[in-house]
Image (tube, rainbow, N blue to C red; front, side, top):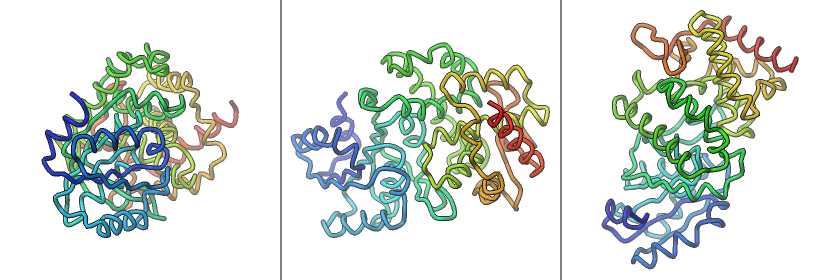
Length: 349
């Protein structure tokens, strides 16, 4: 099945608004536009800057005004063609433009294929934190083409792989072991191996989202590493890759699980070792002001009534439950202890 045939299956109109970033437009834009035009679609191409700075209310309004200027009506389709930033932003535009129009996700990075394109979360950032304004709005389809990954540098493959490791650590020990045993094949983009990883991760995420779309309990599993990861991104002013920040969150939250007696030392070492093979150690945390990180964590949207909640592992592939909930309340003391311990590790290494 071609991407155009998939689009036609889900959209019978003629007008497509492609929202992409400048890098993706340069690499892959022309081929996509030509294919769509040859199939009889009218195309409006809208480009945003690359990076988290594009996920702003200003960028959203600019896109909407361009669409209105070009008389795009409620029967048009938005095609989110890019990484997670483009997917989140374009999805948010689709969810509010003319009170909601159809959109399709076409992720171009491993991170967006595995994570952000699936699940229907849309958002923009504010000065108070990441993804704090947004909607739940499902795409008509998600079209994934692993060949688009060939233009990505190794660090971007690692960046996406971390989200796969995250979901396997919480839900699927066998798939986690598969990643550990196939790291080099994954990083060299062996087509068969990378397809297996994407398929396993997406299937797991889709099943979780289907059961709990609005994140009332089970879907919180997907936040493993994110409470601390998002805080690090904020403190770093979003100048750190999302996956790298989440990796630091996973390391810290795994240490918390060990400190409170839920995760044994052997499993903790296994987790630290796989990240070390990806050249990710807690060293990245050593330049951060811990007070700033803690302040950012306390402002996380997943907290309730001022209490901090983290996803805590009880084993590789399993999450500890607290009153049947997948997020566990963590004391500020435990959080501080784990961050200090992690930073001492990083300063000594």
